[in-house]
Structures are given as structure tokens and as C-alpha cells.
Length: 69
Image (cartoon, rainbow, N blue to C red):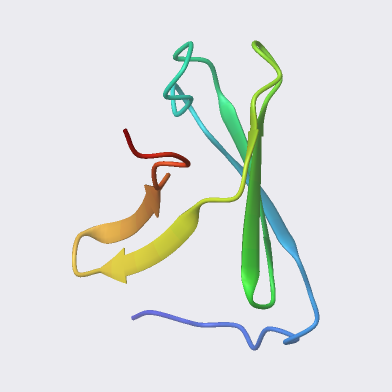
């Protein structure tokens, strides 16, 4: 049986993705707030604003390209 707890819409959540940094492979700390996500790698100090997408197999963190050549 699965139990889901009600979540306050103004509440932010923090979690870590082991090896999630695309620059150095370090752990990526993620903060989800209503309408936005922020990530930081404490190993290489990279800060980003990823897009989050929920699919059948889980949540995907997508870092879109900042510039195009």
C-alpha cells in the first residue's frame, strides 16, 4: 500500500543526486521550490537552473544549453 503525504505548495524540498554533476561528476544538491528548481555542485561550485520533468521511470533533471554556436 502506498501512502502519500500532503505537501504545502509553498514548501521547498532539498535532495542530492549522487554523481549528478555534468561537469565534474560530483554530488548535485537540488532545491525544488514552487515553480522552479536550482542545483549546486559543492565539488566544482557549478550553479544551474535545470528543467525538471517527471516520467514513468522517475524524475529527470535537464540542463539546457546556455549558448548555441
